[in-house]
Image 1: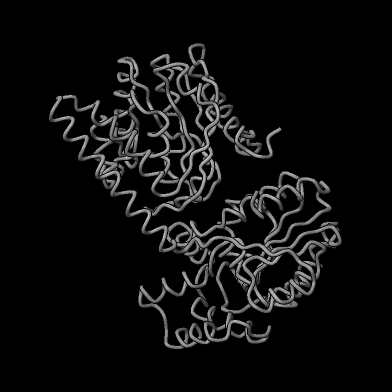
Image 2: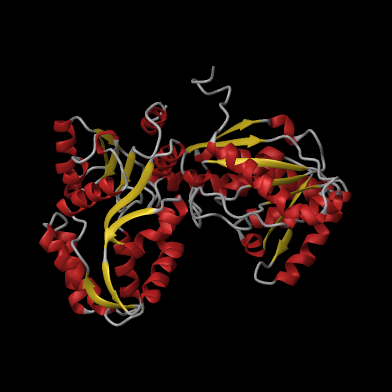
Length: 484
């Protein structure tokens, strides 16, 4: 078990209920790095940054451990350009930055801790010196409703360029947590706190269970003196040199396998068989070279009924390689048209006659689903992600109805394939593999022959709930040393 797994087990063995609080710092604790860096980088690239802002950024980089007055002055100057702008503009800005820059920086380890506290019914809050606008997109992904942030003054829907009240830096954050606990009947003597910065020492001293996450030097020294737990999370912003080297070797393995497949196809004329060999053997090689292990439960359900509609939750580009490794043969997929241009994988998908759809064109998408029904009737299984796209975090997205319509029209069963940890080994929009274990749970086939169209919304909701329950209460693997 990892240190995080041990801590999750301790949380789940402890007290339940909302009287127990769990307070998470944001920058450097929930996410890798500082969200403000994405903001300033965006302003620089758009040539919107003033000389004063550039000097402030340099000062912050050189003096990260400023006092509360210094931080208040710095954040006040950063707000000055926003004076007179609508609040909606800054909301939209941070949502854009979340989707384009920051969304994949969430620490998977932090996700596990948050979810553990939520399962226990604890009162979970983010306590950050950042503005609320920076934190909201992540809070929504994590399902956290309580935010303690530095407040920005807004009048008549427009920012004034000033701060309202104290900043949540140093003692300001500690006082905010105390006030919140009193207002929400949270017992701080039974509560947990997670933070990474030296300025968070006062905040961590407020709670009973303090945890220093990737701590800076002063916080690390204080943690040793106070007997606080220390956790080290792996970086998300940049893959290690070893991960880069392994990724290059993995794509090289797929390329070599593809050349062998081409030779086989030319020699035998069996184009599809060649593509199936490349997809299965190539995926085996890629995952092995990149250091990704696949832990599968319920393998019998992958073969109990063919053809079937295999539904999977989509977090990462690595999902495709995992599914090709497990399903092996006799499959096609409904995929976004951009996937056809993925290096090597796109060629394999085209050779396997995957159905590519343009998600921006609803009419074309509907037309693209019809060939999938024909493929099922011809004896091929269909693989589709009901979420429609990769999620920014491990959160399960809303399920669309396309895969369900396909199954009903063809009279084929649905087989839920629940993926876990693919977000960890390859973040969204990344092409680099990171070593780790992907857990897969294949669930029993679901018969859809008695389903009616008017009840489809309920069936979709039931299947999504099945995915969510599996993710929330993951069945123990027989290879797990903790398995009874």
